[in-house]
Image (tube, rainbow, N blue to C red):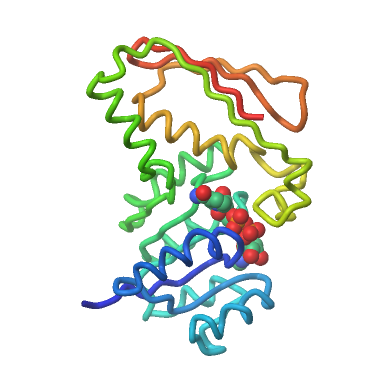
Length: 236
Ligand SMILES: NC(=O)c1ccc[n+]([C@@H]2O[C@H](COP(=O)([O-])OP(=O)(O)OC[C@H]3O[C@@H](n4cnc5c(N)ncnc54)[C@H](O)[C@@H]3O)[C@@H](O)[C@H]2O)c1
């Protein structure tokens, strides 16, 4: 079987901890053909491990897009670049996996939603919470009404960013530590929770959010669901 030859854009933590281990497990189906990162030292680190040559390493993803031996691109960049780069890859006519969220703003998210039809390419947003065993178990319990009728629930997501940023991990990345970084914890972590909740409970009809005067940018949201259910969601 022809292995899909992947071009990787962004070789940071999401690649190292999430996508690379998955490519290793799926080595009979995927081959990493080329890598791009603006930070050349990261490319050198991966070159030997992946058996790539210097010609397979790029610091500018536009150059990598010129290659005709890459079947699809996997985008793992700081969130503010997600739409911009996805659009350029789609315009080059290449299938895409892009990390969540699909864009940093609502305007760009709407444009991102139109890209597959506009350029005739498949685009998958790597929202992994929809594939997790526990979320699928919860969805089945709700769908089959084994837990009875759900009227109300509360979800709290608590992250200690000031402490986590000093440990090796996602909070330590430089771009997440800037106040101007769009969306803050809501776009970075909160989108996972919303995706999982919609996966379990279905569509949301209305959202009412109140900004709290606590920490970086937490807000308390009251969600009304199409099933008549109500919930409170507090990521902070
Ligand atoms: N699904 C999940 O559970 C999950 C978890 C963490 C991160 N993510 C997502 O993955 C993406 C990346 O997050 P991360 O934690 O890996 O960040 P990161 O900072 O560790 O990695 C981003 C990489 O992109 C590189 N980069 C920046 N600008 C570039 C450019 N113009 N061209 C090429 N490379 C460039 C950086 O040098 C860095 O290596 C984000 O969209 C984030 O939301 C998803």
